[in-house]
Amino acid sequence: MAKYCKNNRVLEASAKLLESSTFELNEENDQATAVFMTREIAKNAGFNLADEVMVATAVSELATNILRYASCGRIRVIVIQNADGRTGIEIGAEDKGKGIRDLKLAMQDNYSTGESLGLGLPSVERIMDEFEIESDIGQGTRIRARRWL
Amino acid sequence: MEADSFRLLNGVKAMMDSGEEYSVSGSVTNRCYIACINGELSSAQMGQLYDEIVRMAEKRELRGVIMDLNGLAVLDSAAFCVLRKISGALALMGLKSAWMGIKPAIASSLVDFGADVDDLCICQNIEDGVRLMSFQK
Image 1: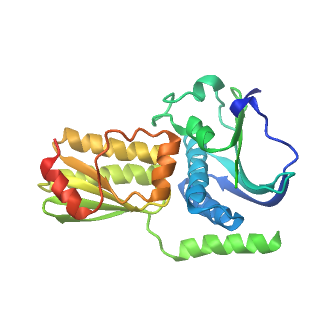
Image 2: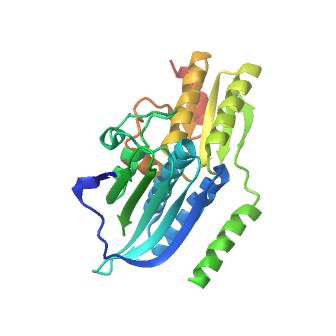
Image 3: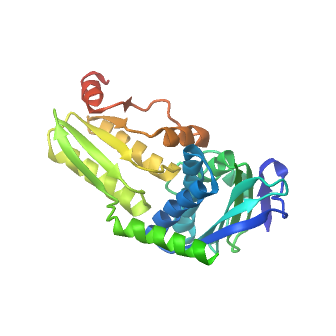
C-alpha cells in the first residue's frame, strides 16, 4: 500500500494508550457526534480551547472525507503519552472505500476529485504535529495523526 | 476504561437531550437577512443552508445577507467552502454578504488550515454588517 508521512517521519510505535474512543461513521449525525466528543476528549486531556477546536476540526475533515468518498468508516480518538510523559491525541481514520490513486497528488493543496476545494488532507497535515496516510486503489484508506500538548 | 465509556455516553446523551438544532434561523432588519447558523454543519445541513439562504434572498427584497457564525463550534474546509459558495451565489444575485461572529479558535484554525480568507467580507456585529451592506461594492 502506498504511504505518505509528514516530514517523512513514521509515527512512533512506543506511545502509550491512555484512553480510546471509536466512532463508527455511517451517516451525517455520526460526524456531529464524533466532533462533539473529540472536543470533550481533548478538553479533558488538557488541551486549551484553540487546540481543542483544531483537533475537532481535523476529525471533522476526516469524517467528511469518509462519508463523502467511502460512505462509511471509523474514527478512533486516542489519548496517548510518549516516553517522556508528554500527553497527546492521536486520530485514526479508516475506511474501505475505493482508495486514493495518487497520494502525493491528494496531499497537494487545492486538489480534489469531489465537491470541495480539496483542502482537507493537506490541512489536517498542516495542523497536526505528526501525520501518516496509507492508501491504494481498492484497498481503502488509513490515516493516523497526532497532536501533542 | 468503564468509567470513561460511561462519561462519554453521558456526553452524547447530553448533546442529544439539549435539543440542539443543526439548522439556520434568521430575521430581517433594514432589508438585511441575518442568518444564524448553529451546531455542527454536516454535508446535508450545508446543502439545506445554501438552499434556505438563497431561497430567502429571492423571496424578500433584500440588500444583503449577514451570516452569523456565532453558533458554530467547528468550521472545517467543507463547511467553509459552502459559506463561500453562498457568498458567491448571493453576489451573482446582486446581493451583498458579510460573515459575523467567527470565534477566535475557529479563526486560528482557519488560518492554520490555509483557508483562503483574503477577500472575505467580515463584520463585528449586526450594526456594522448593515452599515457594510450600504458601502460594499
